[in-house]
Length: 264
Image (cartoon, rainbow, N blue to C red; front, side, top):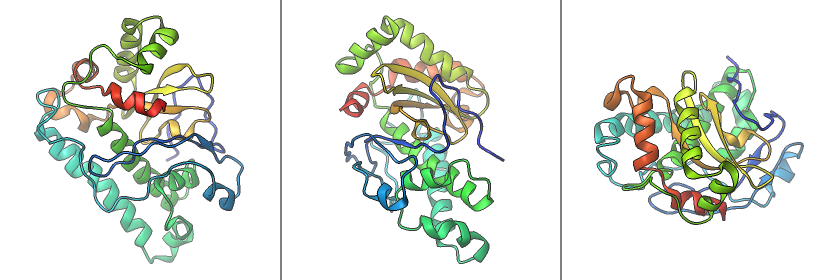
């Protein structure tokens, strides 16, 4: 099945792939990069583009203890969300890239040694099963790593720093921003993500994407924060109460420091 349409004010273009530095996840370390676009570039030009990229991690680690977000997100939820789903995407991606099946390697051989962003760029909107599987798993490894860093214990509340200034200039005030972010996350039909992004005009937007899609596949957008609204992100703690979960995440866990770091 092709990827679901992205809900955004920006133009989704399968031939453009926007990258910006984001925090590469491994233990508690992070690295910031610059925006680079590889739409229309040759593979050689893309490989030399000036941006910081994320290799496929050898292992995954949370940036805080699995009890640190309770009671908003419990260790029980994380044991499945992080311990099964996130790690499962990484396992699946590695297995796919290591396959020796000619029907698979026909499409995946060129992906070996690539970063997560490069795999996402190369496989976005491709319909053959191997490319689609590589896209979904690589994107979900990236999305989840970004998501964990979008949260922190005792987070949420009123933002400070550059993100606060942008919220006021883009939405009028924090209350309007908060209302729109919660509405985007709660209103995303089915599985997906809500994102706070910076557009090419240096204004904030709030968008939602379906399934494994992210702002990385949309020209001109830089992801700053995300909220996961797949059911496995909240069902064990909230059952079908997505609204209660999202509201608690926004008010108690959002990592404004991470957003400010992504702004550079």
